[in-house]
Image (cartoon, rainbow, N blue to C red):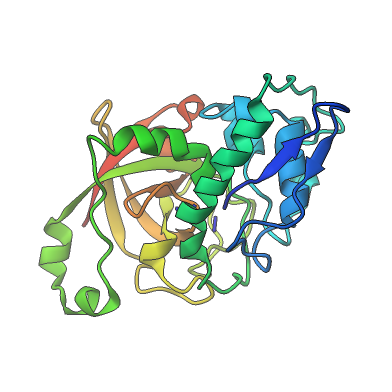
Length: 270
């Protein structure tokens, strides 16, 4: 998926008088309109589904991240459509809190997307976007700081052996469905293949094939020490941070249950 980090944001409020979802006048600064769906449409749906009360749940993973510009809502489960789904009422004051939270997430996550070109063949993401993982990422800041992303010149000068030896920590693994759509690296893969999407900042230009494509990565779930080795086949501009990786369904199942949705990881190039 274009497991497009960093991670897309929300900024909408609900009217307490009429209980109708009222969109903000403008989308947040940096919202990639050529890559993601209309901002007001997204946040209206977000609040209508009660996503602000469902962070870190399988429902949030399936329904609460933005559609890609060319993606249809009908491609998602019926429960993701506010016109057919039964959503919980937002808690009192949730709308106001959500707006404040979203503004902060906009500043933190969308800066990394501003440079990226729209992908030629976007894929439907299932893993939580940056805004969905904000609470998890915040709790990890005091104990795990992601390694800085090397710039292009340092990547080119680094030897294969030194790259393979480095362990990256502080990231998270999520998963997404392939839906028969080619990833950023240009190839179509199945949900059972051992592939993944590297963070968009590491990947680089989302509109081109990256030098990361085809690299093999060994991932360890730090909660249970289970491991899986995958091949980089896509980009993830909405991953939690630079050391997070979005996995195929099959790869994620090697290290965790799908119901978990997101797990802490370390990884190395192999």
